[in-house]
Amino acid sequence: MALSNPQYNALIRRYEERQLKNQHIVAERVRSVYHDFPRLSEIDDAISSLSVAQAKKLIDGDPEALSYLKKELAALIDEKKMILTSHGYPENYFEPPYLCPDCKDTGYINGRKCHCFQQAAIDLVYTQSNIRQILKTENFQNFTYAYYSDSLNNPSTGLSSLSTAKKAVDLCKDFIRTFDTDFKNLFFYGDTGIGKTYLSNCVAKELLDSGHSVIYFTASSLFHIFEKKFFGREADADKDFQNIFDCDLLIIDDLGTELSNSFTTSQLFLCLNERILRQKSVIISTNLNLGQLVDTYSERTFSRISSHYTMIKLFGNDIRIQKKLGTGTSSHSVVSKN
Image 1 (spheres, helix red, strand yellow):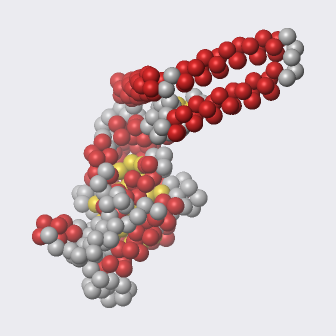
Image 2 (cartoon, rainbow, N blue to C red; image 1 turned 30 degrees about the vertical axis):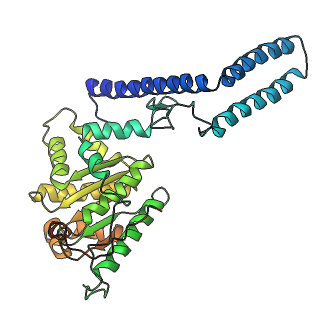
Image 3 (spheres, rainbow, N blue to C red; image 1 turned 90 degrees about the vertical axis):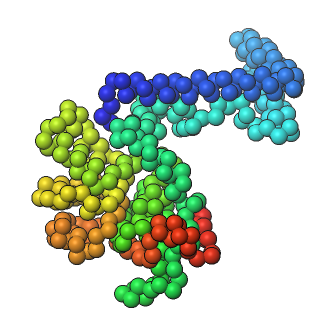
C-alpha cells in the first residue's frame, strides 16, 4: 500500500492506542470484579503457589508432578470461569476486546501485515472513510424491498421490479458466500435511483467484515489514478496503480459519468482484463444501457464484461424520489444477513 512515512506512523499509533485502551479496559474489569469476588484473587494465588511447588517437584524428579499440576490447574481455572458465568459475565471477560482478534490489534500476524492493516491503509490512501460511514446504513440489515413494485413488469423477462430485486439480492449473497472459492464479477445496470450502488455497498460491507480488502472508486476517481500513473503527476502513482489490481474487490461506481475519451476506454479495458487474468473480482454499476456501453467503451470491453460478469439489470421507480414523497409499498421486507 502506498503509505508515506507519516501515514504509516499514523496507522501504527492507531494500533498502539487500541492496545493501550484494551489494557485499561481489562485492568478496570479485573479491579471491579476482583473487588466483588475476592475468591478470584485466592484462585490466582493458589495457581501461582501450585505452579512453583510442582516445578520444584519436577526438578526433584517426581514423575507425577506434571499430571498433578495440570489436573489442579484445570480445576482452579474451571472454578474461576464458574464464578464469572454464574454472575452474568462471559468466561473470557478478562480477555481484551480486540477489534481484530486475528492480529490482536497489533496490525501484524507472524511479521506480515494483517488484513485489517491492509484495509486501513486502503482507507487512508484512498480517503474511503466516507464509505465506512455510508456502509453503516447501506447494508443488508437495512435493505428493504418496499420501494420495488410487484405490478411493474419488465416485458423482456416477465419479472416484476420486486422479483428482479429479490433475484439480484440472491445473486449478491451467492457472490459473497463463494467469494473465496469461485471467481465472479457483478455488473449492475439500469436507470438512476433503483439501488445499484446500494447493493454494491451491501456486498462491500459483508466482504470488509470478513477481512477482505475492498477499494471503492467512482469512475472519474479511478481514471484520475490512471492519469497520475501514465502522465507522471505524482511520485506514488505506480503504487496506487498497483493497488487497483491487488485488492480483493474493486468497485467501480457510476461508470459512464466520467469524461469519456480514447484514454479512458483503453484504461478500462486494461483494468478489467488484468483483474480477470488475476482472478480478482470487480463490481461495476452504471446508468448506461448495453448499447451505450458498447458505443462508449468498445466491443472488446463489452465482450469482457458480457463473458466474465453476472449482468444484473434493475428497474423500477426512482427510490430517492419515492423516499422524498413518502411513497413505496406498505410491506417493508428487510433482507436478512444470512
